[in-house]
Amino acid sequence: MSQPRAIATHDAPAAIGPYSQGIVVGPLLFASGQLPLDAAGTSMPAGIEEQTRTVLANLDAVARAAGSALARAVKLTVYLTDLANFPKVNEVMSATLSKPFPARATIGVAALPRGAMIEIEGVFMTEGDDGQH
Image 1: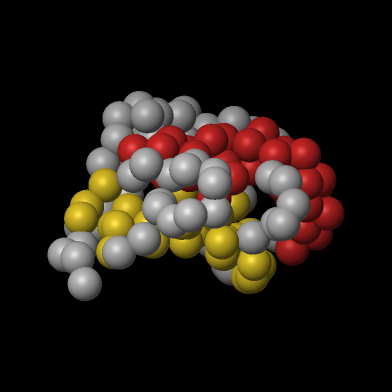
Image 2: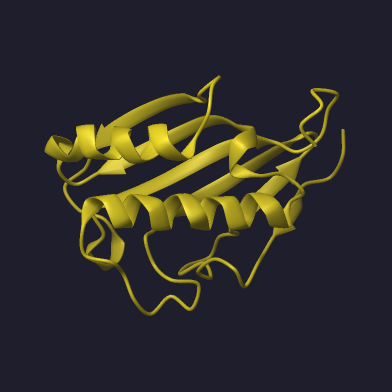
């Protein structure tokens, strides 16, 4: 088995603690939770739809730095501070992702860092013979 490899990109917000943006082990990328911050980590959009789009763009940036892409997600975990936003998040994800959609869990949380309404972490394929790499 290959050694874990840390992923870092300036195209997504830097880690705000002692963790990596992602870790590649074998053919998989384990991407840390992404907040809806711009790549500089200084601004955050207001609405849940735009926050969701920003989080997905940040996940895509981390995935691309590992030789993958958002389209190669196999599992996403979504954290929401208000589960009433679930339908709006689904709309954005339906418009951004394609079939087969990744497996997913959605969890309601009391709060997220920096006052975000959403955070998403994911597992991505980085190599293989599925013709998408």
